[in-house]
View 1 (cartoon, helix red, strand yellow):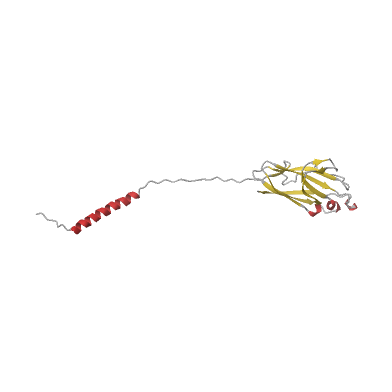
View 2 (cartoon, one colour; view 1 turned 180 degrees about the horizontal axis):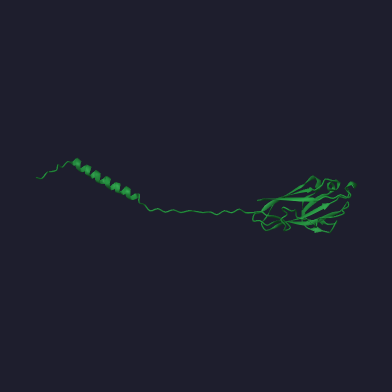
Length: 191
């Protein structure tokens, strides 16, 4: 015997709904199996350097000896001058400052004056003088003057300084027979 199925419209609708949900369910599963890809970016960094040299010499830890400026037996009215190239052997530009000081505090060191130009030397010995554009002084070495050069010294170039030290003609008699070292301390700062 054969059974007759009742043609209930509600049952047909339920079956249709189950079929549609199954199709949507299969679609949802297939979206999870999508293609993927990825990528990475890398950037490389390195630091630059500043390397201050005085006439090609490191000047650190031992001071560069500026013998061309040194004088024995100065008398009032004498001047001496020498060129000092401040070089940048690094990879970055820098500005710098120079602080002047004396190794002793006596009548002689207090009488000495210093001037700095960006120029040339004329004359020789105790009659040598600097020419060019004034950067500092003349001023007393005893005051520990400071010269700041904010103009950048580019990598691989140099700033030519002319250093002039004088014992003015009005120097006190007590300055006789004394000596001192004049120290020029340089400090560079990258720009």
